[in-house]
Length: 82
Image 1 (tube, rainbow, N blue to C red):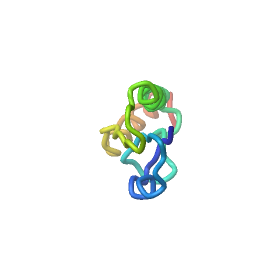
Image 2 (cartoon, rainbow, N blue to C red; image 1 turned 135 degrees about the vertical axis):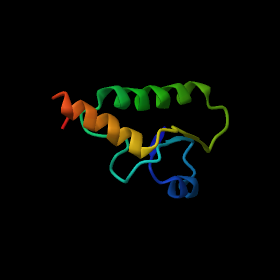
Image 3 (cartoon, one colour; image 1 turned 60 degrees about the horizontal axis):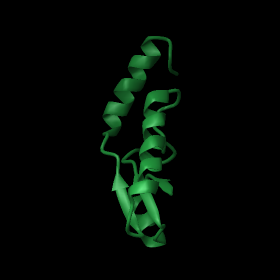
Image 4 (cartoon, helix red, strand yellow; image 1 turned 60 degrees about the vertical axis):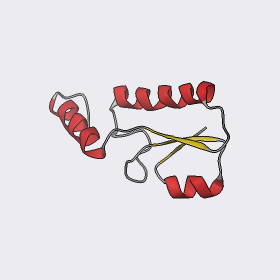
């Protein structure tokens, strides 16, 4: 299982299964200290391990980066984030 931010590279490498997250390079699990989102990414990847039937499948977690940043800023404002 690969968690990737580079769908094109992942397609070329032909990993057995992957989860694409449409976020900037280096942010495969979202914003720092955003435990809820990090858990969601991990749980989604683990679910794909069980449900993927065809090699090379790339699923997508459809959460826009702008939403991730807004949630991270709200956590920071609460003293729970950055």
